[in-house]
Image (tube, rainbow, N blue to C red; front, side, top):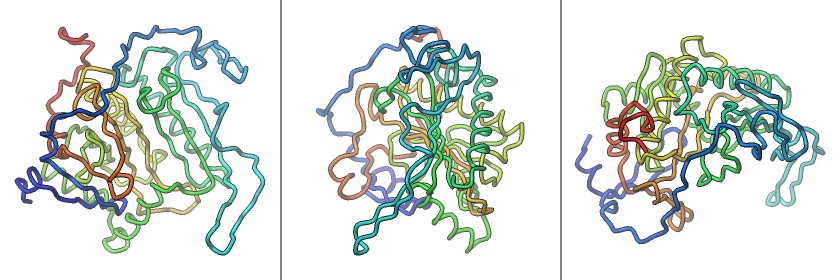
Length: 352
């Protein structure tokens, strides 16, 4: 691979997982920044907030009261984007105006009763409880006849539109496979049919051989900055074993998954020594009753920060009208993440 070309010159890279392209412009990282600078808010939340509608014992906006939960807590979203009881409708006018009903369930998962603890500051055993709940919800929701995809995700930080700072994630289970996993399914199925092998397993073997973009490893999972990454510090976690969904994980893999989540999020917080914002989500096989041997379990992390805690990457202009573009290369991002301390900055002598 011509590393000097990739490091210095404009080029485009193919996203083999979803079929898109990204423009990479390494020389632009040297330009002065005169754009918007985000305000950094101090992360000094209390362990319990009496005004928070996700804290134990508090009333939610809809009027229901949370139990005095001690670990994780899950409930139906009071303002879910999807609903179970919808009128079945299909509209097709001239093949151009199309619409149809979409049934689904939206769930909220509180990671901890502590208002002030995000994933990187939690213990591996406590994160394992979140993993166990993800598995349970995936299986329970996926067993419903009309649910064909279960999307587990987290929006962390106000910068990512998170409406409540209490550590939590969401699950949207719905009738149709959403756009992004549907694009990945096409690519994975094509590769599997042609090679009788998982696309991501083949990709992971290449990455482990090169080691340029690997940021963390354990017995069951590898975290890396994808060759085709769009966001500045984008990371993908890939299972070493070819499994289709989280329900197939062994007990050891669940422990290792919790460990990898902690490692990645600690690295993020340590980049700029703040509670690092991101959107993250698990991509796995549909729950339509088919075996889907082409699918390979993985998780995406899309953080927006670019040069500092106050400079954000915006998807505007060319990105909206053309295709995604990035300045710093995935290799340089991986090198920075890989070199960070594995201890959270708040626990070091130099921490804030």
